[in-house]
Image (cartoon, rainbow, N blue to C red; front, side, top):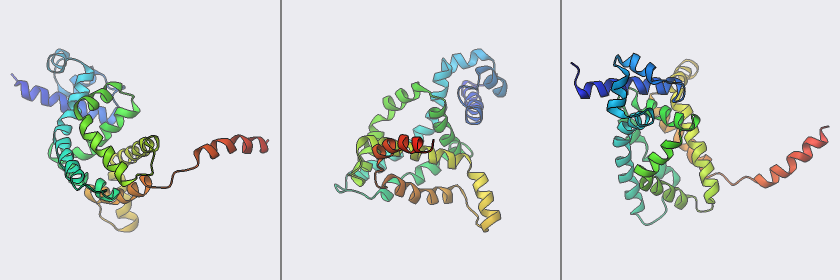
Length: 228
């Protein structure tokens, strides 16, 4: 008989692969148990529900990632002076790459799962992150605010979420991007190379001048009426 640990491991592996590939909403527990070759009751026994299984899939990566980030954020805040945005974002590199030790291609899989949490509107994950890692995320926001003091809180919200979307898309398609880079530019790029290329782009995007959103929204109807 399979041990409790091996059964849980098989369920988690099957769930993460299906969740990353087809999303949380479109993956059924029956698909997971079929891939894991376990019975449906074992999911309820080990995890309780689909929501708790989703959280458990993310948690095994977060248990590695978040303590490292917490340590790095604390170190930067202890300098008692604003760090550049590049310095703040650079601390993500090594902790993210360490996720490959949790599972093969763990960095890419984790970021895909994180993106699924937004596109599939998994509200319970917002509670889960705030409950377990809210203090760490608050430190990140504080560091970005110090690096970009002219950004209002609402603008910072949008830019951090746009950045997350960029990261998720890039990681989800990093293998295809690496193949294009090799074929078109004769560049050999691994996952670390992709991340290092991404960080300067994100730094520039987050720190960009604030657009005149109100002006754009007011002139758009005028332009539309002139086109009639």
